[in-house]
Length: 461
Ligand code: GLY
Ligand code: MN
Ligand code: MN
Image 1: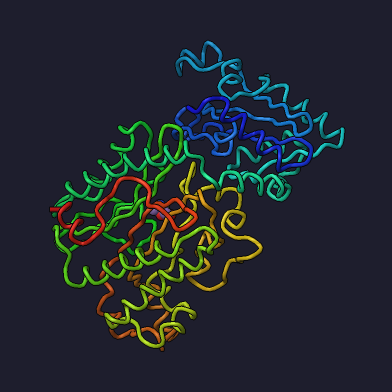
Image 2: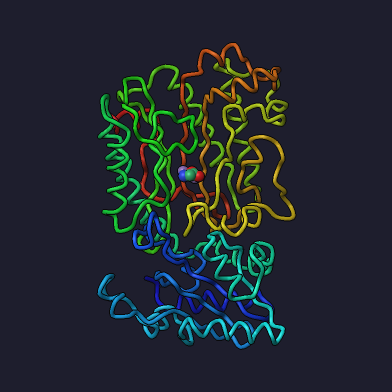
């Protein structure tokens, strides 16, 4: 838990970017899994966490932009709440921990907002991503169903994105902590993986390490021998000799900060000749794109550096052909690398994407491309020092995509479909690192996790 002063300072900073009215930040509520009392693990909204720091369901934060006062709204815990769920902070403690000026009962909020609206004051809120929050907001603000999806405040969104984009040193320390746990996830998983084990056995170990680390997984773990299924959340397959495992997993700290790492490793401990070729191609793509990242240079350039490096390697292997520049410009590599190079990371694994992906990843200089592959790049604009991003090139052999492109003869000048056919069962490789951008480049965050072919083979042996 950061000191209350941290949240006060963040709110003061936010005030400087906004003009007048009221900022209303809803915290999250409980979310039922299959009946009201059986809930998904509670996760506070990240913007609420950022400005108020308290993780308890059913809270609202109201910042008055005109007098600078902040009030936290919630319910005093009842005896029944304490009987079922244990001791929990009351309003006075929530006020103290968040550094708010006042705390008040949630019942009062409706009247406060109604008066503000009658006085013609603007109520700024962010795009809601949970239906429950949407309904609460529309109820409180007298909006029609669905209206909160249009009426959210662009001014507030831009101010929050600008502020949360630059990570404070205490936030970087949290992300480093998440990565310490993540390193253990990988060393244990690589050692435990062997022929005859099921994916779920390794995935279970990984999740246990996240919980033992004091937090939880930052997102559902991907642990699969079908690495070409980009977000494969199934773990029922038996690992066989010759399989490659793609593990994409990250920890969230107790305060909610994420990590997001991917490694690809051979079940039998050594890569085959073909696996080495593709693995090295992805690793080179990662190395070159990392070297290209720097403050002020559009991250889209780094995506294209990754694409170019991969294309050059695939040409050497015989899977691609033709002029390198033309091939990259046409987006032919997206058959093998259909996703973006990376995204922001912080309190959310895809930081702030709930506020609108393009507010986070694009600006007046860099607009999102329409091209297949490049359009999946979630962050294309130039980062500043202190931005935390993932860098995660991959190479996949996706059967239905190959069939579709081949039938359309798409990019035939650049793709050797006859050769691709003999690689159809390869699967996929992805390698992902987390970085902080600096003036002259970037630094990889966290302790090293085996990545070179030699190091991965040692870790798996
Ligand atoms: N873990 C999801 C991603 O890498 O974006
Ligand atoms: Mn990932
Ligand atoms: Mn990622």
